[in-house]
Amino acid sequence: MNHSHYLMLDDGRLRHYDIGDYRTRLCAHLAKLERDDDFPVPVVTIVVEGGRDTITNIYNDLRANIPVVIIDVSKSKTKSDSFMKLVYEKQGSGRVADFFKHWLLYTKEFDDASKDADIA
Image 1 (cartoon, one colour):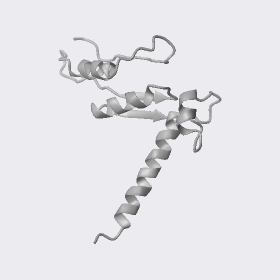
Image 2 (tube, rainbow, N blue to C red):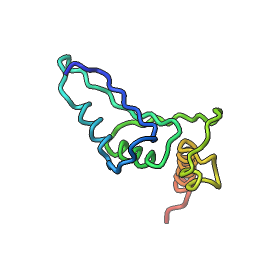
Image 3 (tube, rainbow, N blue to C red):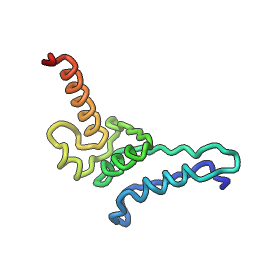
Image 4 (cartoon, helix red, strand yellow):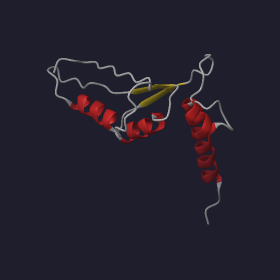
């Protein structure tokens, strides 16, 4: 194998098939292929905005030990996805980045409270 980089883009507009974790498994497989120079092919998922399948994709990638970078573009003038508006309408703009930001803050507060609690 002589490729060091693969770039896969999904804007979510075409061919909405239920492929499960196929994308994750494909990326993990490409990263494990033996190369001539013995350097691994790094794999990372970059999320900008997101849609219906984004949370599932993030979950699958994290389970496969693929790092996920979520880029917060809240300053941009793009519209939020209707699915995320339904999921997170009350506390954020409805974007995946907001969903995970609030979720991580909530779990940090919960973790901090658990550490401060008296254990009987």
